[in-house]
Image (cartoon, rainbow, N blue to C red; front, top):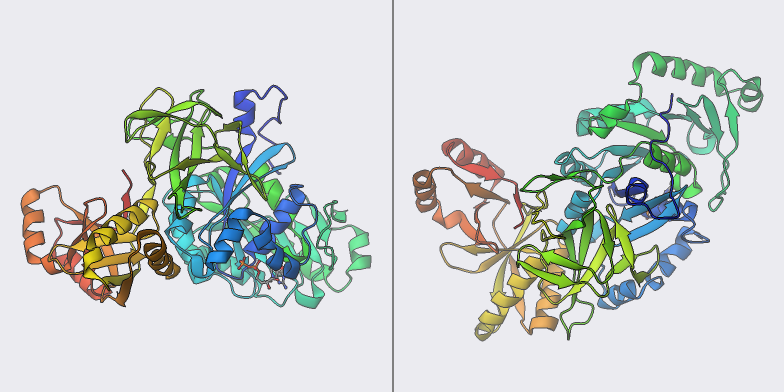
Length: 539
Ligand code: GDP
């Protein structure tokens, strides 16, 4: 049976434990075109955050107009923001963190996942598990983030549902527990059967903006079902019998441990199956989870405010170099005007105009709780990975840099601008816009990224903000690994031998820039005393 609601709902007094308990902070992970934007829109619709979701076409054109922030991105021709949307649903406060996909896929996409407590994986039922989903799930796995799965687009011809589940299990290495099961697909898509509630949710096309409950028919043996779906029922009953015997039953603990994912089927564009996802999110997904800091583990319900920065939003106004740091609150309550300790700088800062991210606008926030994201204005004093707290010194861990997969050598058109280039790249690296490597052997700087648009953003910003015209050229590098050894002698020998492939990153850590996968494997074999790391922590 479905577990009961574990959290009590809001109390008007804003009691700390209640406020924190009713928060859910999650991201949607998917491959481009699987339906993330469409699903986001429907989720917001249920949350009452936008009155009318409209058609996808209208959405595409109105999307840019919804916030000044996005308008600026549009005028720059790029979308560098991964926004945060907050909405209420069924007494819960939901923070949905966008993970940029398509060409604006970047390190931010990965890092956003370090700031959530659960993730919703959207899979295109026709395409199955795709490349970007695999990458994003790997990042979720670093923290055993609980994953809810949505098999989308069943209003189209899709792959066989059993086959889709098998693919998730084998490719993504996570057990699947079907919660709903599709009845037909494409033109013959009738709805889904809810295995835990023993009811059929009837599909009706063209109900994109409905927020009332769907038609439900209880009981698999209900004659009403035979009357409505005479062709489908025999097969459905057979399948359900098979599932009850052979499929994993949903196990809350396995889900919370990131070992099992509940699977739902539906059609985002038809707004079908979306409410079931929201129910899973509020009933099953965890509220703000405890966070490890160097000093100790911090529980969300602790009274004192703590948090860390997982993303820096580039300056909106190039003249002023102002930035917004996205801070995930890990514990306690935040209040506007609060003085909080900036741990890395060892000094207190007062936060006058923190911003919150409602579905469509940025607003000044008076109060926020563990699980929420607030934006802090700054002029470069805040970096990704910075921790903030009230009183106790706590440095949060687990906000990593990810080994870049794309590399460019940087050449200057005007060599006299070398200083500005260094400064610009250092600052852009601190913001997380790109990674910068300085080869030990001298030579041109190397930029690393996980998405190609990162290079365009950097080139554009070097030009407009730092007055530097840089040329990026392909670099013969396959991947990077941060290297470390407990034994200084081994590290010394390694450094001397492989100097031509070694570089310092912006944080003065040593990295091995491997020319090929084979080279990396051989080097790792030859140097067992060296640790090669695909991620490195901030701070
Ligand atoms: P994103 O790239 O993951 O954000 O994907 P979008 O939400 O932009 O969707 C990609 C395309 O798939 C769009 O043309 C959508 O209209 C379409 N789409 C999304 N969900 C569904 C669905 O449930 N059924 C069908 N047939 N198309 C869908």
